[in-house]
Image (cartoon, one colour):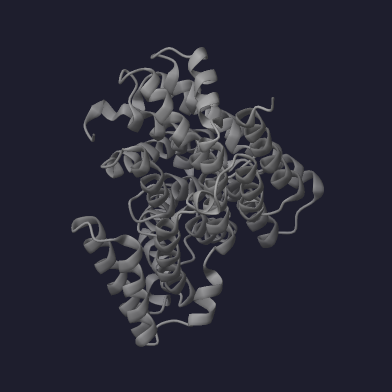
Length: 422
């Protein structure tokens, strides 16, 4: 007799492997596979499609559309340059500023991908202008983008909420954000010491007097973003729908090119998240999630549950996307493990460790984060094959070190944050 729970897990592994090897979007593949797997398990089309979260899709489209406009009309880029110009001759602050500015931009809405591309590219070109270490400067920016990405306004925070509410968990927005921020800050300090960021000395080419003022469209965009942040975080209004409202205002006032903003929406990423979510829902229905949680549970006790899940997320993140694969797959497993230990393991602490450690692996050149650093470097300066190979090795080793650091933090229960936020 066929064990559909085992078969479903094998199929998930095959789908992830195909995406990694052939470099294709596994979101679309996941939906097709989910359909046939669901039929084999006597699921109806409605039950299969239920795994595609329409509310999450709308929210993510709204947020990325709004910030796509802010990127397209130059608001975010000009804002970044003005902040860096404020440093003046105190260029030893550049590494710290790259992290803080990138985390801030990521947290207010664009998320780790958009903020990572914007700030990492900016950081590399700035480093060459300042004649300082471009690899280290890019790392500060990318680590900052990852650190700030779990805010309630960003893609990761929205995804965490959408995945957890059906499992019966909510109200952990601040905790998850602070946990991921802390994780990124800890490793940034390590990189800062390794690359002697405190010894950076250079002439800052950016002068505030040389940078143009915000134009009408950019001022309006800044105002809309500020109102969105206040209303969605302060007054708990629906983030996605409010973002659509803000985007509508910008469209009516001709503040951005609609077609370019639409093209800027990361449709592939959104389909990956929702597509894998559809497949994971089918696997859960067929008993695959329960099977994995039982296996992991047999290896754990209440003291090792969180670090084992953290290590699992880091390893999985080396070959797949945090938001597209790791979170949709491991969050339901985390809920099952929490039930198994009857409350002696905390769900919020566990998903915080999972999310933070998964992003810790994301500076690997096999992931989007590391790839952005390498592509930005090679675009700014002609590089040899040997240089690129050395950069590949360095980034991968740093990602391994970052995962190890986060597993240690998990073992020390740092991600519980003393229970202050849940």
